[in-house]
Image (cartoon, rainbow, N blue to C red; front, side):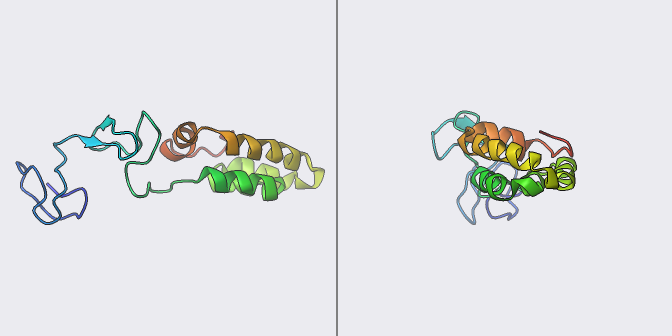
Length: 133
């Protein structure tokens, strides 16, 4: 078994890592934000939506996505950022009509006011889909 914090090898029956002192995977983890019990391999707290790891692989930031939608949304840049390549290309192809710019302005506002937990569930936990709205 390996430590979830430093990666050093530890005994299967160990309670804590002898190198860094972090509890082993067999013990429950707790959310640093709200204190809720979480499972050892859980990456986002289901109670408050805060990341339980320092960085989720491929994680997206809702503020960046919202600002990209407002400023460069007519070109579909926010769709590319969020992993919706198909819609990003569609926005790019139709950018001369200004319809994607209007839609993107609304999407940007919705992204900025969206709940953090809902944003994480939609864009950080599920694998990206090319035509995800």
